[in-house]
View 1: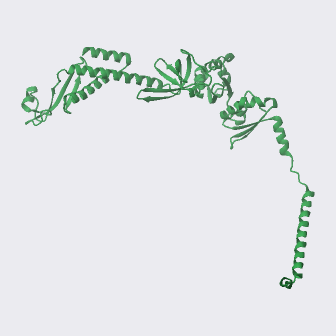
View 2: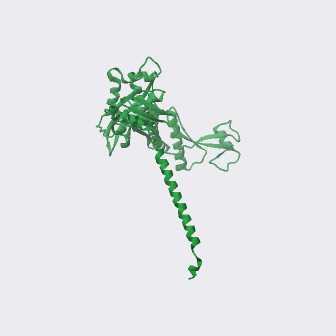
Length: 396
């Protein structure tokens, strides 16, 4: 069994699997096999020599005056033959290693070692990627599996980039290196399951954290980030040092920093704006690159009315409303955008007093009086007609 010890030492060195853990697992496996194959009682133990790897089976028996169960008991005379110091009530360990047990031990040892290696490899992979959950990794594209993409992560395991987590219109080639965001790492019976994404907003956030030194040291803080993957991202940043321009730090010299991230995202546009605790200023910044004339905010309703120059209206709203939509998500306010001319028309309309025509009102009142007079005259005529009517005429 010295070869087994050498193999275990190598495993401990290369894969970090504790040799004693495997030996204990082998002992437990052999104990179960011994009870199953040889019908041994519950007082059986299996020991594996930690130095030589030799395996022995022992039965723990109680020293008694008269033996009723030979599997569990031993007479005092036989016990004294083993150890003179034994007395009644003591326990003695007697070797009962079955014949040809070495072959069985070798078979079970092999299966246990293989199982432990698989478990350990899964654990190592799980621990490695669990530490990277909510972070980014570089993946190497392997192949398409239907509409999903198989990606190798850190040369340790493969993950599937699902269609729902892919940027629309993005096409990958085998061996291409791409940045991925690890959304979640789950432990399953078949090994760790790693959910990766290219569309998650935090992918952009993590890319900036790795690219911009001022974000890494805490000088610049990313307050919020919203994204329509593959098209545009808006990111609000804030500097804890008044001497550091947060937008400039993220853009970099000649746009070097932001361009590196844009290249990772295959040309996705990124708007970097200054965060401000004043919602009016923040909303104005969020509508960049459009200019803003005025912002009126209702804090309780979380809504804002924004006026922009006539020629900037389409820019403020953006293609299919994208700029306004992202600005609203970034600030948390419902934003109503109007041009200067629209705002002026609405203001003029609101400033006009409601028209009141006294003559028409009086005329209406007069008309009502005439109606009342006519009604009164009709009633009086009816009463007179009733008085003149003679009941006898009915009889006739």
